[in-house]
Image (cartoon, rainbow, N blue to C red):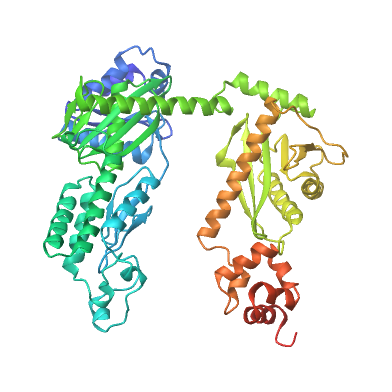
Amino acid sequence: MTAAEFQQISHTLPVQAGIYKYFGTEGELLYIGKAKSLRKRISSYFVKNHDNFKTRKLVESIHHIEFTIVDSEQDAFLLENSLIKQFQPRFNINLKDDKSYPFIVIKHEPYPRVFLTRRIIKDGSEYLGPFTSVGRVREVLEVIRYNIPLRTCTLNLSEANIKKGKYKVCLEYHLGNCKGPCEGLQTEEDYRDGLQQVKEILRGNLSPVLNIFRSRMQEHAANMEFEKAEIQRKKIESLQAYKARSTIVSSRVGNLDVFTVISEGNFAYVNYLRVLNGTIADTKTVTLEKKLEESDEEVMQYAIAYMREAFNSLAREIVLPFELEYPEEGITITVPKGGDKKKLLDLSTKNVNYFREELYKKKILHLEGKTDAERKKVLYQLQADLELPELPVHIECFDNSNFQGSFPVSACVVFKDGVASKKDYRHFNIKTVEGINDFASMTEVVFRRYNRLLNEQQPLPQLVVIDGGKGQLGAAMESIRKLDLIGSMTVVGLAKNEEEIFFPGDKDSIKLPYDSESLKLIRRIRDEVHRFGITFHRQKRSKGTFKNELEEIKGIGENTATQLLQTFRSVNRIKQLPMEELVKEVGQRKAQLIWQHFHGEDA
């Protein structure tokens, strides 16, 4: 849309507050913005000469404009943030934060359990958080568990079940960690009082809980129940110690949100401190990618809205390093010059600086932060060291993974221009190989990978790294020959321990200089395929996807199965063991069950 074309429609734009959307020629959403006056704000894009290249590019790409009128600037602000999060337009700020955060859930059930979760299920349960640190959540739960007796079992403690006497108290009751609601030894009202204390602790408000414990201690002491009084005294000490570890500033500051920002080129880094009753409950630093050279004020406004929503903040005061117009009713912006709030602001600045420095170190260590010329230099060095016919701008690496000799999977990572291309990573479940056979597994996954690339007419890599040395390399080359890809790409094997590189058919290996950039890149790729493969394996195991064949034997539990696998490494080896070996390892009864499962009654 040109300036002349815009002039023809400018008079139709409303002067009220609202949000506007810019669309490209193919209907793609380019940008979402907010305005006190839609006509004034949108006109500014077309009547000014923009120094910023990205802004000029945005204006040149606009084909048509849509807008929504709202009642106030605050409504426009909230709607803008909601839509940016939903549609993530190309020219809007991009907040790089894809993590899921832990919550503490108070389960919707009779005598609710309290535990850590990352999944929010809309079943009426109450979720407290989120928290940025799992370690901190576990610490809080440990404090709660020590001071407030709550059940941890998964029994259905309905009133009918308790009246029928279906359950008996367990060890937790005898240890004093539970008051026995399963046998009706604790009323629901008393249990609810405990849950209220949990909520106060999680809000950082320990005084009401401490007062309850002090009152109980004095009551027990007055009744000459000194052992019970001592239990309450220890609980008071435990909570006070937790408060001392958590409190950074005076409790007089109450509830605050503290933000600081550092801009560097096209990126900005924002640190957030959530303060509850003078206690720093959470700290989080995020990276934002600026698309139109947004100011620190614009970045901060967006980050505040995002973080306050993500962490369910209800604080009515926000502490910032500069004045900011924040369009949310009832919010006070404070720019402190001294005192506790200034200390908090300084602490936030220290955190955001540390985050930026650590990010910079990582970029220096890897190739992600280097210029195109620097990355090319490393790739040219690798080409020379390995005498490759082409520059290895596309590298792939394969690795097999199994758990104690069972459950094989494979992984493939992809690096383009020296940088990890995570969208191209692939996992493989082994389909055609029975048992553990690393060579056959490698043959299968290499064939599947490059047969698919050929069928989809996708570009092949210039370099393929097989993690595992000569044997694995030979297995991979079987598939390369079968697909008639000899000469289409270079395939090498990487010995796991010595970091030697093998070429197909060569007797001797190549050893690159230990501190060479070429070997550092290969190490980086190898470490990444290990990480990726192991992560996949853990996910599969945690989801119960793998089923140990030994556990399917009636009378053989998980502990026995794990013990056998740790000793003999695979189910195939266990199948071949003589009866005497099995008896020596697990005893006569279990050995008989395992033997009969694999060999039949008459074996």
